[in-house]
Length: 408
Ligand code: DP6
Image (cartoon, rainbow, N blue to C red):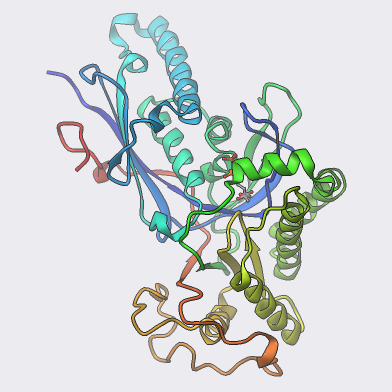
């Protein structure tokens, strides 16, 4: 009888507030600056991965969202994560072998794997899934192999899958310390504060486009490294101080400062994209209109009540405190209305609008309605309301594989 060795785990998405953009080593994925992110709740956005190891499997295979990825399994980044976790398992087996006798130790490190992974958010939403996906791959492997290593150690492996993935090994507020060593042994994620540190902080993801982005972040950032002089200024003179200020604003729960830094850093990242030659454009008219609405909202509120940030695509993420979320959803709804057919525009997971109609709240006092025109229906396709969440977790009763080791 062959025993089954299998683990299932989930991992979260993270959205940076100090952006990672640029590598000093493209193989080891070492960044040109440190970064900070907020981990979002797995309730609304997560990757789930089941990995089974068996001496009966003829080869290692990978399924993503139900489809076998025959070429992707040989991808260098996936192979890096498999190699590094297998090496740790091998060390562990040798160590254990010395303690309890070689015959009693399972050589899981030599077995082939069946890896099945899926996201609970539509990949079509154009949201970054590489961070949660690679974090989930590495975390699930670490659980399968029973590796006695910390989340920070694992972050160094996930980093070699996709840079931003290293931050998804933790919940709450996370920094990725760029490190200075050539072998990358000090380029790792650390938790600044856990997910329950600032429960009032929430996020709205405005899905603007589900089209595949033009320039991938991997290509885009290297083009910026090669051609942008603004990036060097950012690396040398801006990010080091911002890392300190952002950490401090998080620890003090100072939303106003957090928001100002988040928006400035998103702006500078996109300025570096524009300073790349040829330039890279990730924001579109709808993204820029959202910036105008949030700016007017903050201006007329007399304080920063919302912070926008954009990654390598047009979708906006808005961070705000719980009490201001209905007002902000109302604003987005007014300027970017959904069509009648759009039934997935806003699912209201926190039941904010159960006794009132979305879009019926008055605009904030003195809000200039002419700041932007009302956009065509479905310019914003969906608003995902979520909060700060935990890091990866084991979910053994939620296997994605059948007893035969193939996807359900
Ligand atoms: C704009 O982590 O996707 O989202 O390391 O090449 O896989 P690779 O890039 P990736 O880049 C993310 C860039 C960003 C900013 C951020 O998340 O910090």
